[in-house]
Each structure stands twice: as structure tokens, then as C-alpha cells.
Image (spheres, rainbow, N blue to C red):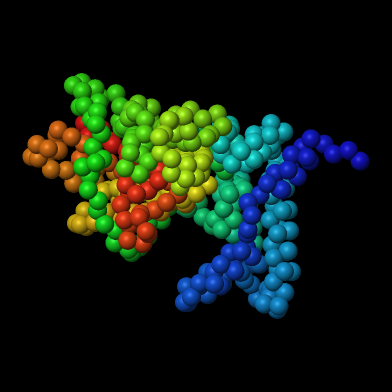
Length: 371
């Protein structure tokens, strides 16, 4: 019996789904102390079977059967959705999933009102496909943010909505309350050719990016004019600031190891409400920004951003409220309130062996144009 191309694509897509699922959610929740864990477990169980009267009898002893039932339900729903797609749409979705978002793939436009039911929950199609192919624990559309490269970006009530799971990112929730981190001296961060930022009449760029390895800046300052910039070590069809092409004299094995882990890197995007950072790599990144903290705080916090998550790293309105307009020094050089530091893989601060970002193997300084 011969399989059609469509059935082969659907089978490949199902095999490419994200690992984990409902059973892993419950196990993770059950391992957390306190009553909050019990709530998470209860929510996970209700999400799988509906939590109605007489559901999941003897689940403690037959977790495998319940998990198999949830898997079968998810599989049936996913196949039903995929069978609605045209062959070209299936090919584009498979390319996006197998490349893990590294390749440029087209939007997958589907009817915006076509929700799908899983258990007792209704999911919009973009959320369902993100749940299947990226984040099994995803529950609500408020947890995700659409990337600016998507056709559905900025459209409030479109008839067709993009369901490409790699055209969305997950919103990073700030730690509350995070541990205190120390400030570090900013003198060595001042770019040697900072006059690039202060040329009269030069307002074409909105930020400048510097790449550092420990205390040494590697390569030139990268001036950014386009609203979105990819910063990466190795990215299929990559176009932007390629760190892998920079010549470094650093012989440290740790630096070389971290450089190789940067992978797809990050996407830096200037949007209406500020500057967003999307972690496209397979490892966490760490961010410090004055606009992420309480204005009255004497310390700047370091925020951990997991793969696939986005965070608003810089807010122009907050930055201008923090500036000192009568300070002559502010007008003569980049002020720390208009900079963001991003470290790849390794964090710094009181919770880490590295107290300062200058001890991190590979990191970025993003200097925003305060004009």
C-alpha cells in the first residue's frame, strides 16, 4: 500500500513534535514543594481529562493509561488540524519545525476563528501548534508574543492568522523577587571609537552593538539601522551580525566552548513599545537593563531568558525618565541607562561564580542612540 505525500508529511510532523507533555507537566509540578505544586498538578489533570466526576479512576496507579489517553487525544486533534492544510503549507510547517526556526519560512495563514478543543479547553490554532511543536506546557495565548517578521504582527482582529509556531516567542516572566546583583564598573565598557555615536546629524542608526570576550572587545562596533537584527554564531540563511566570522585571539577553552553554543543567537527588534530580545539559541541568555528594574533600585538585576522566550529589554520612556538632562557627561558619552548587557550561556552576579559581566566568556553590549 502506497502512502501519499500528504500522509508522509503529516507523519513526519507528528514525529517532530516537542518532547514532553501532560505527564511531564504533572511530574514537574509534583516535585515542587508547597500547596502551589498541588494546584499545578490538579490543573494539569483537569487539562488532560476534564476533571469531571468519575474521571481518571485510580490514576495514581495507572498513570501510563491516562498519559496514553491524553497522547492519543492530542494526536487525533493534531492530525485533524494538519489534514486541513494544503500540501505546500505542510511542507512549510515541516521546514520550520525541523530547522527549529533557523530557516526563513512563510506564514501559515489559517482562519482566525478555527479553535480546537483538547479536553475541556479550547485553544486557538496558533497556541495549539505551539503547544504541539514547541512548548507542551503552554496554556494560553497571553503567554506568547508574535515576532515582527510575521504577517499577523500588529493585526488586532484578522480574518486569517499565522499559525507558524516559529513566528511566535514565549513571554519571559521577570523573577519576583529576584536576588540582588551587584553593579560593575562601566569605565571599561566605553567604546574606544564612541565618536561613532556622536557624529553631528547622524541619526540613521538606533543602536550600536559591541561583542566582548571577557574584558576584550572583539571586532568593530556594529551599527544598526534596520528595525530587526539577528546576532548569531551560526544560522542557516542568517543575515546580520555573525559572531562566527570575527577573528578572536582568545585561546580560552571556555570562550571557544561558549562561542560554539551561541548557535542561532538572538534577535534584537525595535518595536513601538521598546526593544525586544528573542532568544533563538538552545541555551539561556542573561540580560541586565536599567529599564527592567525599579527606578529607585540601587542595583541592576540580571534576568535569565530561556530558549524560545522574549523579553522587553529596553523601554525608551523609562530610560528618558531616568536620564539627567543637566548632566554634561550624559550628552558627551553613552550613559549606562541607554545600554543593555547580554551574556550567552553563562550568568553573572551574586548567584554565580562570576561577579561581573567582564568575567563572562561571550557577551554583548547594546548602546542605544539617545537622540
